[in-house]
Length: 141
Image (tube, rainbow, N blue to C red; front, side, top):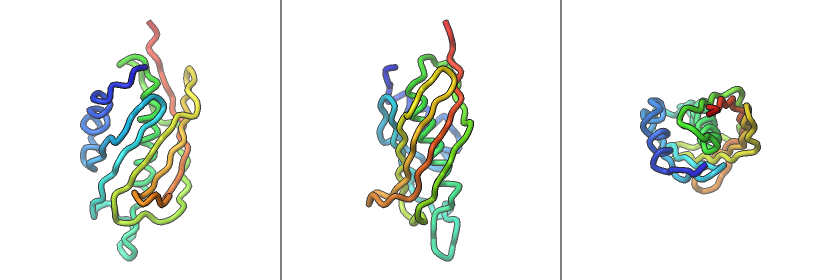
């Protein structure tokens, strides 16, 4: 599939209400790869004592970037994609600064897509890593 950056940007930044609310931004997209930015907001803190990011925000970001990487394999606007499973390994607390996430395709099958994702701060400090499994329903002409 030819990756149309403007279309992916619209879907990721504007079409998904939660992404729009959080201000998630598409940084890079190409076949089998996506990179997103989650701008820091005080509301994303999960532990006010340490100002650590909420683990659910990190998980959401990893699922979103894994899904975005998986979307690059779709061939029709009628194809459908949904999360089956996501595993997240939290490696260290997220700081109260912007979060970057990257996702890459591991396997794209007829019904299942698998991605590998990482979350980090721009200082390249790894926060979490994950694996996403997605169900795909491709429109057959």
